[in-house]
Length: 468
Image 1 (cartoon, helix red, strand yellow):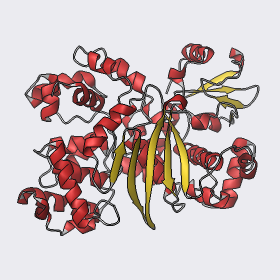
Image 2: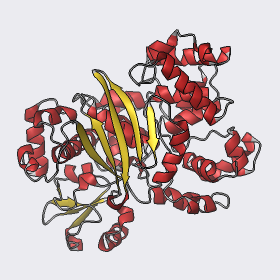
Image 3: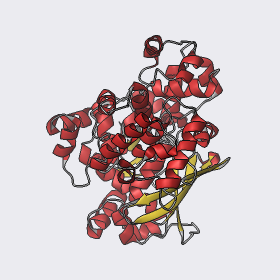
């Protein structure tokens, strides 16, 4: 990503929160890099370098500032104008694709060569893929050290380090202190039964909007939503647990509380919640694009910071989407609750294996739709990551519509929420057509061309503010 020095310096001088997390300032005279909102006095121009992401700054030999904590900045480099390939690579890295350090395998999943992928990362982010993965591990480890009372050995493995020695060495090199020294600065009262973590976001954040969307779709027995809190049960490879999420608007972050889990599970759970609540998006950038549209402008102004609610689990969301074919939101929610009551266990959504051979017509489904659900369950049972392996939005849609009973509406709705595809757009949705005043899905698709690459956010504005 090419950064304009003068524009970055102007944002830095003004401590403009709109650019917090969008770039980082490194100071050659101190060897430190900071956020745009750092309270320290702005350095001299001659001593400044700007970097597109924290990993690039650290690859350049700089350490994170202790005052502004770059690791707590909102946003993600995945949203900063990178190519589709880099965007997807970042998402896979976030899911642990480089836990074994195999860049060639990551490149193969993206349909490119390893050398080409490294070149894209260097050109667009200023750091190679392994550096991005390493800094992500470091930042997550620091969060756990300072926000939890987990043993340091557990934190090492929660953050994806292969050994405690590597964990200690990495933090000492990057932060100038060993983990034990970082822990001494904490001033937090801990609950021995729960972990509490904070997820920063860029303002504005429409918390009421995201709960308004999730509440009528909450699955009985699995999810509970109150005006100020989202709760759900979850499963890991070694057990079950509960989590709850609240908004802390004055601190510009969400508070995530969850029952203690095994080291291998925590990072994945945190990422699921980040996507469910869409905390890594750039609301102002999206609003600037969509607000110029005559139809969307008033809707964007009415709901600043509207997010696209994600999905905690791709299989759960795809089942929910199939249940929603040609029925109301309330009807689909009722059917989902019946599925949980019949085939769920311990307050969890049924597994693909449990549904693959079940008599799903029992809950009141037409025979064809029941068979569609069994087909979806069989696909996920055989390959839980088949959607994550899609090369792009078009490939993901193609994989889904290849399944019996899955059409473009279902595929785009799943891509929009389960895969966090910002340009997914279920054009044949009746609510979207009514809200747009265009009752022909092909004409609506043509109208939506002007909303790329943020059509999923346009869909949310139409659903939340439309006339239907």
